[in-house]
Image (cartoon, rainbow, N blue to C red; front, side):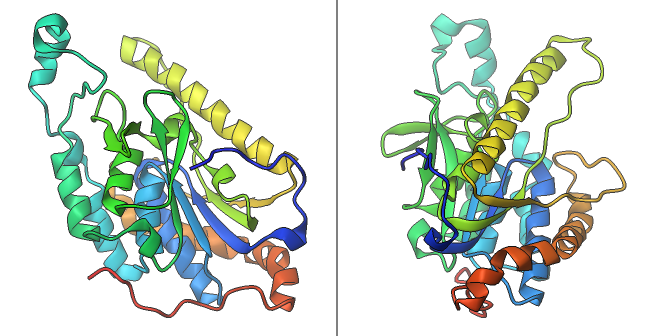
Length: 307
């Protein structure tokens, strides 16, 4: 689970993975990744590797499992809904008011994550990361050290729960003895997790800053969003500095879409298809040397491994 990245420029001939899809945090907007992959499939292309954090990991898991089309959208509705954040832990209020008596600690959480765990379990069962048709790397954050962690083996359900465990809101998830939380804290667009890819397609979103600072929560939101936005840009700058090719896919949306606006799922799916279609020429050009050499994978026609 090393987080180190090559410091030397990467030779085009050194890439063992032609195409990687890297999905950052973005709430419900990350579901556009399903449309992106659908459009690529129509053109005879598919990612050889999927990397994701937070909501990007959740929808990336669907892609890695071979889910697509209407079925994938229906499942996305159950995996990402506002009710998942409304399961209150009443003990949390006692922990805030009387931390000494109620036992305040690093696992403090305002919300219960059992419903999230149940939904993810229903969707993916006991699938192991190393068994997926398309390799998936899930990025989380070690709550004790603050370092980025890449999960490539073990239960998919546990990895997804960890990558989506927003601190304070949800409890951390223990994997191999480490308390893991939302990957967005350490790597909001984890491009460094795909160093072997010739071309990286990215779907990530800069957070919007509050227009007015008239309460503490908005001040905290502005501060945290600024940090995450700058961290994401730093990751992209580092990728470009080491000579790796990246194409960022921009969604064209005609309205604001909130983090939990599942009514926008069909629109986001189509926006993902359009975003991929607009960059098809650039994607083909970047992959052409490998296509000529016969190293670009054919379309994956296998059915999903998840029932």
